[in-house]
Image (tube, rainbow, N blue to C red; front, side, top):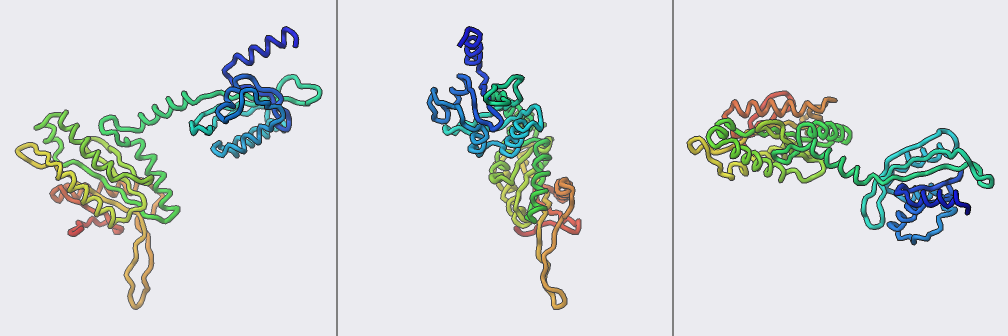
Amino acid sequence: MNVAEQLLSGILDTLSLQVAVIDEASSILYVNQAWRSFGLFYGLQLDTDWFGIAYLDICKANEDTNQPALLEGVQQVLSGARDHFSIDYLCHTPTQEPTWLTLNLQPMQSSLAEQGPCFLLTLTNITHHKQVEDRISALTLTDPLTGLANRRRLEQFMRDEWSRAIRHQSSLSVMMVDADHFKQLNDSMGHAAGDDCLRQVATILQGFSNRPGDLAARYGGEEFVLVLGQTTQAEAVKIAERIRQKIMALDIRFAGHRLMTVSIGIASLGAHHAQSTKEQPARTQWLNFSEDGNLLLEQADKALYVAKKQGRNRVEVYDKHHRLTVPLSV
């Protein structure tokens, strides 16, 4: 090895960037020190001979990567169908530590005579960047006062859950929860105490949001939304009543010993069974079928409005005929 080759090898081994050279069959021809060091996460020895290992086989063995896009991109560069490929992907090591990598692959200007075309493959560890990005994303989707999801997150969640419910013909319920006489509570107890009351309401709602299809969110001011996946209207009414009673049990008094309560409006999507008659057998019908995922929020809000007009501290349901009914027994 001459001086220039030694210098180049030293430079490549000093880089924190993982570097490899592969041929048209994705067989590895060269790796630098950073590449070997990363191999330690997989239980390999630092002096592991990478020569001849097919990089595509490594990709296929990592089930956590977005394999189709990654494999297709690498193969397209190796076949000459594209001149560059880059992708971010998640790589789980045997230590179960998630590692995010950016892969870049492109043809080299010069090739080895005995090997044919060569390709430069680099892997950049972007785990820290992804973690910071995730934290920032979480902050933008969280209400700072209560820690619940904010309205932006709610809108995203509703779109997904609405589509899932329609696709699988499963039930979905939404309830709008509003603290009664909250302005009076703030005026008599102060804003700090009012904020603490909202946090207590949020804690109760969060306790009813334990499944992947559930979400508790602050809608604005003293108004909250609870989304309950795979929950029928009848089940939602029972849950709403439990929430109403739990909030009363906080025994928060204000403005001449008025008890803090909530009003709740419910709207549901799901199947119900029509009663059978001699002329027509029982059949399954669908409530609130629409392509607009905001429909349930709008209906729950209308039900909440009626709950307020009917005297507050009660649960109202929006039914399939667009009539509002008061559940007299739960």
